[in-house]
Length: 442
Image (cartoon, rainbow, N blue to C red; front, side):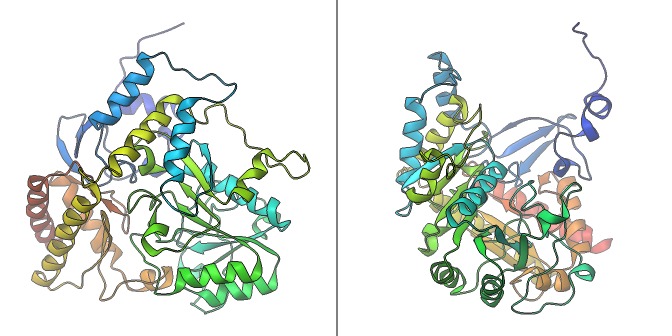
């Protein structure tokens, strides 16, 4: 029986949703209820407008509800495209071709729904291809919610111990329910530490190294010169599969992801978020020999690729439309994002000098994060030891009060979209000045 609820949104959520929220990452302070979004702006239930630099954890590279993407979605529904659940479709072939054209290492593509699904399947491919079980992940990285990778994001240093080059750290689960036996197959190491990869590959049969090529879940922590190139050499030497998790970096920084910026080619890359401008779409791309395991005629070698909603027509056409806009040189999306990102970086650094605060800004194109320390962090230990988390949290709260929305958790990425205007940036800089002043008084 259908009943019309008159309870407020927050009350209904607390009553009926597990934990009162659809994703635990959305449980923030302030915990706002947003009702609509367009371009670079969002509105809450009270009607207050915010300039959005959260972008739903990064997907909205073109801005909320981009008209061309929305038009593509409406057209595919108007033509009565549906979820058929049998055979293939023209739409999924078109999207796979678009992705394959984005980087020379992409020989084949698999389409999924979320980044976590993509990293899960990429690890399974690596284990099947190598016949090995162990994997390496990065301390300070986030690669999804499943057992292999739900660990070692912002681990307290009291539990990690001091930095030691060439070592793996204890598995620190960020979820209950991960079997201890499973944890023993996963080896977290520090970013930018090649010695730790070599030592681990010499110690255990290593199937894969999985990493974000820029750590974008603790802001913007970049690889040191030669690090990614060194990983490629180690993968070739030891025979493990090199997987770039480009769920956040992919398509935000370049077609084909950050791999295309540095010209270092992984064996597999996983994409999500910005690939479809906010629609649920993910992909695994890379070597055909690996991806062909999804359809290997030998059942003992075949990796199960299943998903009722894989390549659903709505996110599929949204992704195709998004990629077409990004690669259209006349629109100049990446050039605009670089310009706007640089403006915000300069403003943040200037405010640090004016308020006598140590401020450095990690930035790659449209993704940035201010760090309140005197140098750019190079791994989680460095960031945890030197960044002023309390000041970061105060600034974010004050910005939200000023109508500028950045995710209210320290060291989380700010994302500029192509929908941001010069006036948005000017308004944001003025709000930053007020927020710095207010935070300094607290």
